[in-house]
Image 1 (cartoon, one colour):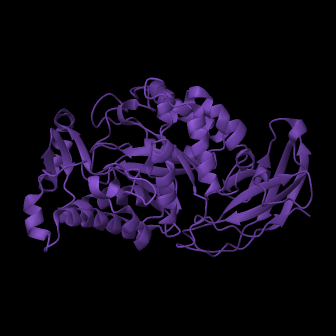
Image 2 (cartoon, helix red, strand yellow):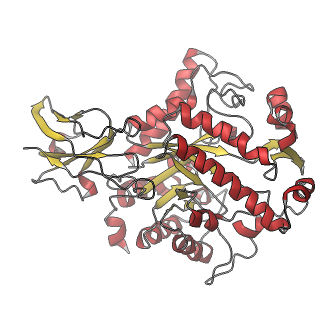
Image 3 (spheres, helix red, strand yellow):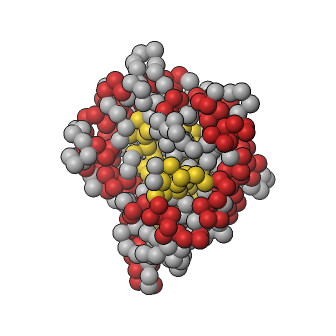
Amino acid sequence: MLPLAAQPPKHEVRAAWITAVYGLDWPQTRATSPESIRKQQAELIEILDRLKAANFNTVLFQTRTRGDVLYKSAIEPYNSILTGKVGGDPGYDPLAFAIAECHKRGMECHAWMVTIPLGNRKHVAALGKESVTKKKRAICVPYKREYFLNPGHPQTKEYLMSLVREVVERYDVDGVHFDYLRYPENAPRFPDSYDYRKYSKGRSLAQWRRDNLTEIVRYIYKGVKAMKPWVKVSTCPVGKYKDTSRYPSRGWNAFHTVYQDVQGWLGEGIQDQIYPMLYFRGNHFYPFALDWQEQSNGRQIIPGLGIYFLDPSEGNWTLDEIERQMHFIRAHGLAGEAHYRVKYLMDNTQGLYDALEEDFYTAPALQPAMPWIDNVAPTPPAGLTVETPENGYWKLSWQPATDNDKRNVPMYVIYGSDTYPVDTSNPENILAQRVQGTEYTYAPIRPWTARKYFAVTAIDRCGNESKAIQQQ
């Protein structure tokens, strides 16, 4: 199996979830003074630097938790984890900051939004009159000491879309990523009987609930695409869709247990990516990962890996479980993987971070393209000039690609090699991606690793890459 890991693909999603709820991954410091604001920001920068050093390219940044948010919203209050108090302004906009810092490092930033659950009674009480349960009582329901948005109420999708619209219109996000877009598990008594009688039109309760979630997904997907077609819309569903021909789900699956008809969403083309929460091992992982890929309708399947089980207090997994899963993902052509959660990467739990840096993610990777949105490559840049190095820095400049789509302005990928012409199919030659503007300064960390020859391509936000221009 080693050759697969030894040759990282040029296109692969390498994602990590950064969990803000309870400050699990970030932040550890409360932003209450200029100094503590800087410290809170520095904690995030350290995480992003470490991800970048291991050639990650996607950050799933928690943006909405339980009816509260991590950006300046006109709809919901700031999460108390930022300052220590509900609605407390941290003195900067964490989402804007996260996006800018990800982009500086050539990484995508997706706004990870928890959708249906609104928290327990204590949490809702703490939000007070700012809680959606007070502002929009009609779309909220209590169930088992918690509150939820009611997927069966027609206005729920509009409320969620209002939050998504704030994020997509106002921020340069690369994706919106929906979590808990499902009913509570095994919830025959979920209090929606009034809505069921009113809206079901003869469908079974299970079918009606599945249709409710599908309608929310469809409504948000179309809404996002109308604003910015390149913004990726994804969900992290329960890891097993339903029983497969190869292996049973033992009663725990997306379709029956929480009413997510995710393969229906893929078939209809109302998702760009799916991050199934495949936090399992052995036969509970491989047959279900394969099933997602076989039903993907060409969309990107990015299994979520349960790396938290490497922590002895969480499970008794060993590193080879995760390594085998990653080999399998590459061998079967899935789009990449996502690590749940970033803390275990930062802690290098059981040597996972080292294994990624030294074995699996040894070269950078570009984002897989989205041909169902746009499959036309930008025009190549022109006139690449390379100024001979001064104090070990090479300065590259070029004429921009001539595409004039104001909303989807091409960015650039810089390649370098010791041989001419530069082989742009080899990811080990990628020096930088998502470069904006038409200049780049190449500063090799170690002078003796410096590359001699350079090439530049234009790339759009759907992942279409132009032909390369080589230095003359």
